[in-house]
Amino acid sequence: MKVGIVGGGILGLTLGYYLSRAGYRVTILEKEERPGGLAGYMDMDDVTVDKYYHGILVSDRSLLRLIYELGLGDKLKFKRTKMALFYGGRCFPMNTLKDLLNFPHLTFTDRFRLGYTGAYALLIRDWKRLEGISVEKWLTKLSGRKAYENIWRPLLKVKFDGDFGQIPATYIWSRIRRMASTHDRKLPKEDMAYLIGGTKTLIDGLVRAIRRNGGEIYLKTPVEEVGTVHGGIILRTGKGQLMFDRVISTVPIPRFLDLLPPLDGYSQALKKMPYLHLVCLVLKLKEPLSDYYFYHIADDDVPFTTVVETTNLIDPQYLKGYHIVYLPKYVKEGSPFFDIPDHEIYGDFISHLRRMFPDFRESSVEGKVILREKYVEPVHTIGLEDSVPGISTPIDGLYMANTSQVYPSLVNCESVVAFARRVAEEIG
Image 1 (cartoon, helix red, strand yellow):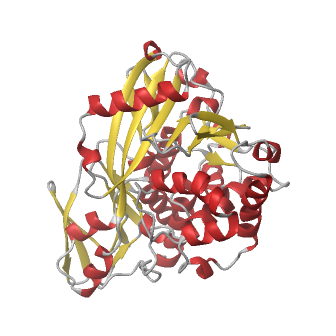
Image 2: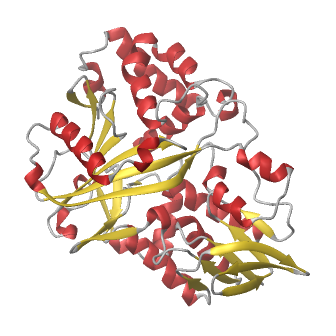
């Protein structure tokens, strides 16, 4: 059976791997010149780095299983990382219970309730109980108004570009459970892992495996239209058309709808799903910024969502001694920020970076790239509890599998790989 996959991101490649391993004749069509999508890589002069940051938790069972299946286990390195909270113009470590208890901007009761929120979330198994409750209402009830206003509200504000009034409590529930999963005593004491060579190592491994299984991957081949013929699905591209027994689209919903003929109710239902776009400044530095991997931003004045210094996870020796920092900002669809010129974004972000890290010197910047990506993260809201679509579509033989369907899990490589495996089993 011939299966076409639209999109060569990590979801499309993983799906292609599992289906080709099961004996399907797989063809992946990717519009870019390199596979990988958001999990792809780029060149910063003499260094190849991940386009976006992708940490592997030691509890990411689906992703680690895939890495070992591909024979890449010898490329894995494990490390203990540290994170901090930027609040009120200062950085505070947030790695242990002692760190939380020493945080000076909350009373003892506030800190206790903040810890209780995490513990309570871990006791909840049925996430559907949280779908109709706003994250503000849930967190205020559990953590208290002061902890909500000083900690949770700023974190939500930067994540959702200020518009989080209809975000359900499942968002924080999923985040707490994911981070707590690394504390399983059966797992290594290190909390994170990385692949030597970054996501390129994983992508190259998937490409090799797909081709070894008889699959094909066409790059620089955007799909322009999906059509049907008796007994099959046609994908029309600028290079001609291809026919398949089944087709699976892995691109975001708005991209998928652009390929389809009008499908009335089906299309209208899918259009209800909003997305966040992403603007990200990537810095290649000659000197380290700090010794923390991840900074949560709880300061209204800071424009970016977080600071991720990946070389506090990845040994700089694999990046020619440079230090790589990511400053992402999520924006709503239609936000004017998405179209601000690069030099303005760079100047604004660097000024705030200096405030966060007084020892930072711009002369340390050896390279910089500003990335812009549309439809990065689907936003599930209250009132759309039944908005997670199934993989089947009204067109026989055409399936949709994208990140809008991993809910309530967060969108990351682990959830995407796990979802790809489920889709392959369901279709197969």
